[in-house]
Image (cartoon, rainbow, N blue to C red; front, side, top):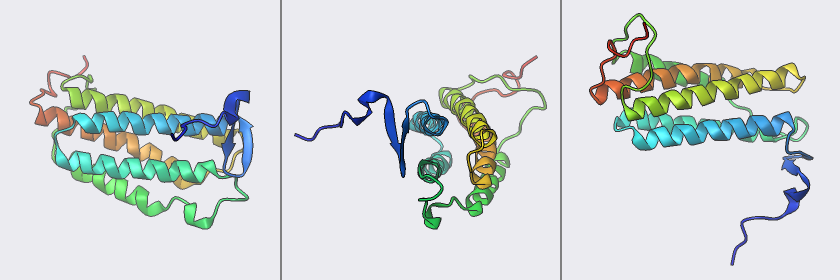
Length: 181
């Protein structure tokens, strides 16, 4: 029988690729926040009937795993092939613009909850923004972080917001009724 644990972390430490660190190390915290964001996106994706949104979310989850892989290496051991590329930020911006062209947004703030998939995407957006803040804190603590990662996470919250509105519309939600007053 295959075991799903090693017991190595029973002392409160875990592995980065190149170093053993405490589980409360800020790099581990960031990896956990990104994993949580990917899981929240996956939950939203499982509810989203719009195929185009689902396809974009799968690509985003794969990108988040690439980002986590890059951040999991210590700087001195990370191969150049693990550097997250600016082309993914461009793709994310283009995908957001393309989805945004399919919905009319009211000028006011929108209350989440017009549809189950839209609400799940809004939760994923909130979790992603928290992960982004944690990456910024990592930078401020002096850790080397590829600036492309920050740009990607910043744009990702926009994609998730627009994807939520696309799903709200597909579910027959009323964005005008959902505006915050």
